[in-house]
Length: 148
Length: 253
Ligand code: HEM
Image (cartoon, rainbow over all chains, first blue to last red; front, side):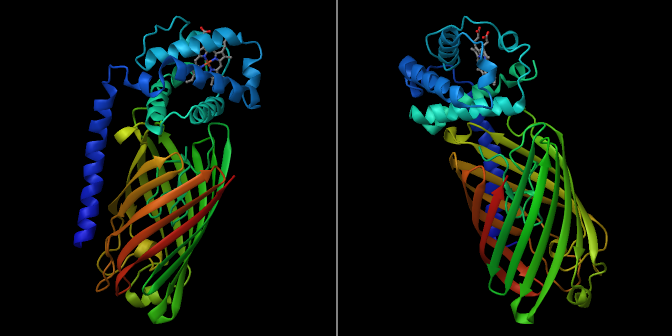
């Protein structure tokens, strides 16, 4: 092996060792940094507003929301995002399993909603790192939402 | 998110030279996806062209076909190979489970121009690789950027992926090689990464080196992606220091 190869191999190994450690460090965040990066309550309001616009135009999933009380959905989603991002809110809605029970949400529908959320966050000018941190927290809920 | 990945030189969903555990296309369960890819690598003495087609079903099964042509300048000749691939996701999910996504794959290879490989001492013009890949995407990795890590273990007796046939005087049976890659997403549609692929020599007197590359991938939308790389193939068929440029264009449906 020449020197180049050895150093690239070494960087692969190092990267794979360092990365999970950093991710673990990230996981233990118990502050409101993410809430601030999302732009506080005003920012989250804007994200959810844009998300509703995206959903209303998305033929893949809009049907699922045909009978939804939009005001309640908006209020609870803002509350939930505020809560999980470390902001001064406590989610008061029902559990994800209960809410999405009977909807039989598919993986593709879940992906569609994530795409809409990304578009909404882009429109709201949320920085990439904050987008990814929020997406990671929402990703943890996926198994309670799909196939219920 | 570019979770369909690119297409590696043997036709499987992956990076440039290393397969990943992802299934071709952007499909979820119950969905169908397909990719068509052209790739080209050029070094001092070699030009490798690849045409690959792959389909993914249900985010679980992948079937692929790759046609490779290696033009060897100094020998004024070319060797071609067809690769028939299949991959199945066994466990995990690239993004949504703590466990990485794990897939088992096979690549059945049929070398089409056996005169040169046989002159170099290759035993067979066809062979089958079996590999196990594990891939994981950390959505918010270092600095909040998404990081994809991948490791592959392959059992093979191919010479230069099979372009120079299979087996030789030094070794004829399948042996294990390791492959790894990492990609960091600088934005939603741009990633940079590195790949490493271990290779072992079977032919006596003909060196075979590990391959590595550094790449940049651009995924402007779900239907198109482009990957450019600097690739180092080391010594191939007795031709030393083969490094150069790699470009891959992919259309997805
Ligand atoms: C990360 C993903 C998701 C999160 C965090 C989420 C969160 C929520 C929240 C907080 C509510 C209000 C709860 C309540 O009323 O008590 C809700 C309701 C709802 N969600 Fe989701 N949801 C997600 C994914 C989805 C997907 C993929 C769909 C369908 C495509 C969906 C369809 C609905 C519908 C239709 C309601 C209204 C239920 C009703 O009218 O009673 N959700 N969701």
